[in-house]
Length: 310
Figure: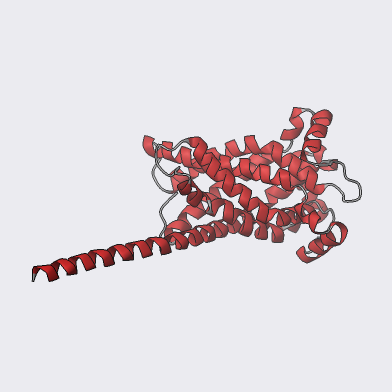
């Protein structure tokens, strides 16, 4: 009787362990897909509300008549000359960019953080920054074509806004495949700094707030953490944002900059260090609400999908 009981116990233990391993393996892949899906959903919802600020910021960075007008003046001129709907110029590629780029840079952060062993309470900040940077760089490689098209469409003057298809066809005809990857080095560098700052600061601030108990848990903690992360993002990313916008918006037949380093040198020579922070306030105005909306919606969607909080 006893040998049979022992065999049954061993068989049951082995079977349970096997089930755990299978569940973990399936859950890991499932969690990755859920994480990327939740990130993409939160990003598309957030960008729909924030896009008008991005249009004003981009016009200011490109320069020309808008450089002298400031935020209020630029917004007023766009509304008067092109209509209110023009604040959503480029929303098509913006949606596609968020669905590709942001779904990866947000969705891959937790898996990469775990792979680097930075998912423990006492993990080093630099490891969290590295996880965010890697996720941002990978997302940027995928999203660059949509970023170029979005910038082109947002800076188009007049009532006639090219459709996404028209903009893509014109880009391919004039510049070939390479046109869709214009400014790639600046964009990847920007994405790595932006996402490294965003995710590590959000993670770290959230952990500090939770430890202090000053702010109630849940959405209030997420909001405070995201606001803090938004400020640090604007500070570190503004120079990269300026270089990226200048590179992406230069005419194909009369290139002003040969690359990212040439662009940095020419901005420094012509405008000084302050030139890299032109449009800083609208960048911060965009980052703070975007970060709050994205991360709060992302956290809520993770909960709905049965995933733990970041």
